[in-house]
Structures are given as C-alpha cells and as structure tokens.
Image 1 (cartoon, rainbow, N blue to C red):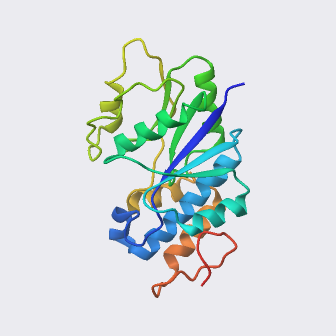
Image 2 (tube, rainbow, N blue to C red; image 1 turned 120 degrees about the vertical axis):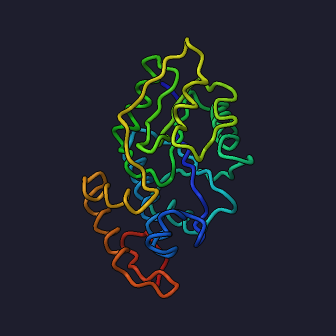
Amino acid sequence: MQKKVIQIFTKSLILGQVKTRLAESIGSFKALEIYKCLLRTTLQNIRNSEVTTTELWITGASAPEIVLWQQSFGLELQLRKQKGIDLGQKLQYAITTGLLNSDCVLVLGGDCATVTPKQIDEAFECLKKGFDSVFMPAMDGGFLLYATCCYQPYLFEAIDWSSAAILEQILRRFDASKAIYLLPPQRDVDVFEDLLAVIEHQVLPDEVCDWIYRILMTEFDGLSNLPLQFQCTPSA
C-alpha cells in the first residue's frame, strides 16, 4: 500500500496578509474571514478523502486558530514552516522532504476549497496507475493541486508566479518521457468575481456558500463577530 501525504500550503491568518486582491473589493476583515472559511472547507475535504497523513505548511509562525481546528477536526495535522525565498523554493523543499518518508505527495493550497475529496483520491489513483505527476489546472493559468511520486528537481525554479501561464511554464520543464495527467480545470478564489462565480455555479457546498454570504453581509468593527458553530472565526 502506498504511503501518501497531503501538504497544505497556507498563510498565517494575519489581517491584511491574505487574499489581498479580494480585499481590494470587500476589505481586509472580510477577506480574512473568507480565507479562514475556505481553509476550513479544504481541511474538511481532506478529512473526507482516503488520506490519513496531512501536513500544514505555514508561512511564519503557526496560528493558534489552526491548532484549535486541528483538535476540532481530529486530523493528524503536522505543522511545518515553509522554507525558501519564493513559492518555487518552498514547494521544492516541502515536496522533497515529504518524499523522504512517503511514496507520494500531494500539494494543495489551503484556500483551494473547490477541490473535492473525490478529486484528491483520483489524483493519487492516477499516480498508482503509473502517471509521474498530476495537476489540477486553475482557470487563471496556475494550478490548484500537484501530486507526484517522483519529483523532478528544479521543476518550480525561476517560474514567473505572477503570470497567467504558470502551469504552462512548469509543464515545459518535464522530460518528454514523463507521463502527466491533468484533472479538469477548476476555479480558485483570488478576486471578488471568482467568489461570485463559485457561489453562482455551486462549486462549493451549500452551507459554505451560506457562510460566505453571511460574512459578506456582516459589518465588522475590527473583530470577528460571527458565531463559532462553523469554526471559521475566533469567539466574538
């Protein structure tokens, strides 16, 4: 049986440092609450997949809220600190570290709540069938998910992470002999239009869309005042 690990890449939950493009439309407080909501949904999706080992790779110090979520979910979350100057170096370090103790690694953005448990399991199944790597393309040119059992060195080096052709740049790095599987593309939430689209097209579960709507409709006074039932926020 393959030993599989999921590595979630997330930012520390600090006001003004997450979903900055989304914040341009709805403000930093609401952007932070929505980021928490997406992260919690991602954790729930992983819990509902067949993978039991999950690592949370965080920028900066680990947030106490995440530890509380770990306890409430019952997930065997292992907290790790991202290392590297840019995203490419951080991904390379995490993946190569993960493959030291696991057969396969799947990397997922913490806010990629549109990736379902079924798609996570499908990615690992593709690796089992012999594919070298699996990607889920994002509609903006990036990717939401990457899975591999045999990481190719320097795959993410010198990538223009601000371009609209991130995945295209990465795919050109692969040797011709490598078998790559692309899952159906999915939308991630970077700007307000993305948020409206995932709600309109019911990409997220109904209860998640309901909570996002409540966040958007809530007036913030500098502190979160949403209830704890959904555990997206600290107490008021």
